[in-house]
Image 1 (cartoon, rainbow, N blue to C red):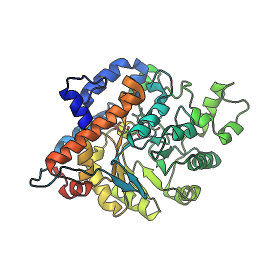
Image 2 (cartoon, rainbow, N blue to C red):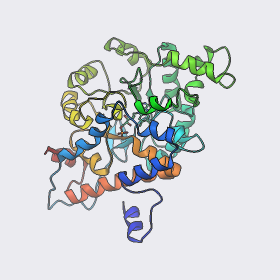
Image 3 (cartoon, rainbow, N blue to C red):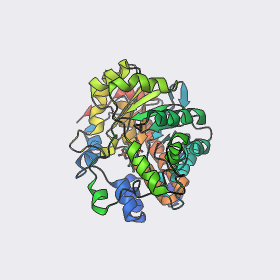
Image 4 (tube, rainbow, N blue to C red):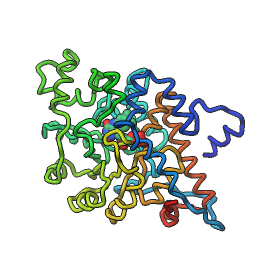
Length: 379
Ligand code: FNR
């Protein structure tokens, strides 16, 4: 925070803007149109997506005075890990599109290494999960599973993640099929279907064994195979099987209903991840932040992760005040990658954290426990 503020006071103009509106405008202008539509777009007419961000406006916090906030502690414990801040990078598939060299996933991993902000690496990474894990250095990472129909392939992906040192498996529940995405449909632009090489998937030994020729020699066949195996519909009956795949913490992403949160806890989930996929999967929904309090209440002592609509450090603090244990950043870090690779991504994360830290300072919340105790009220 001091470094960013100090640079501002010294008249240094940052290469990557410090606020979301300017960041999004610059990044989307810099991206090729197909990449912009893929990253920025959402489901239907994007009302849910817009509401996700707008809904933060009707939650407000009250400052407290006469509290010594000269030192703030933003660290958080999750699954026995001590994280320096309560923020992580949400999984973003085909992140390779965001940097000219096609290795956006590695750039995000390097930003994780530089900031201590964990990355949840997507199944649909453009780099093998092993190299992504390596690029994260000492920063803990999590692996996000899009559960394939082929159980052996699912088991292989999870085993690789475990061997690569990831600290938990995030199972995304809301995307066994892709939502109605007009921007991509109108332009025939599903980058992942148009052969952008899904190297993580294609590097899997179980996936490769099912192909007549390696993906490098016949990418079209590999993509057909990928489409054929992608997207198992998960039900609660699959929980024992999912649980059996790993001893790592199991985190269920996409839980928005309190009953589902209770069910997840009963079924042995180690954390609930409240998210509506940034409004990319279903339209006509409630803003994710408005569903968070109900999920937190239902989850009891089980940690609740949250994403969808976080655009600022203020949003981060509001989500924490409403009970999230840690908060995921989605599109903002993609925009940072697009403008300045790993450095741009790290800058976006640092700005969010600096704003959150400064807000805690001026609001009289020295710790995350104080943030949670202060809460937020619906205005
Ligand atoms: C996503 N998201 C996502 N989620 C997931 O579990 N696996 C994935 O591969 C992807 N891929 C993906 C691509 C792109 C371009 C975006 C924007 C999002 C959803 C992501 O993890 C997160 O839930 C949302 O991005 C959060 O919303 P905001 O912060 O983007 O509003």
